[in-house]
Length: 64
Image (cartoon, rainbow, N blue to C red; front, side, top):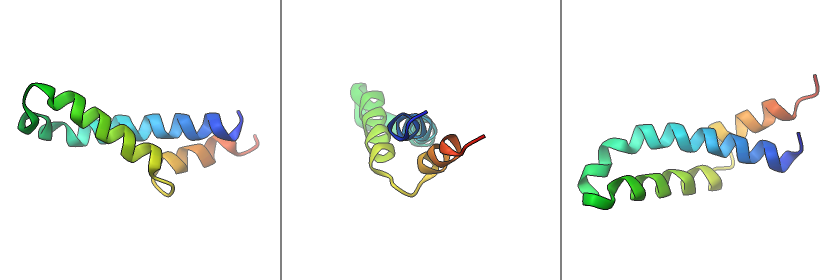
């Protein structure tokens, strides 16, 4: 896999975990709560350079 694909996969995994963690907040945003939490989780994961998504990307980039 190339570096960009690894970063995207890592960000998607991180977004999934963040979405689950932030889901209780969705009720406070009314009917659009799930969309707000999902968008926030994806944004955090895409801009996080040292988080869980980066660890996954580094693991996928390692030669086997």
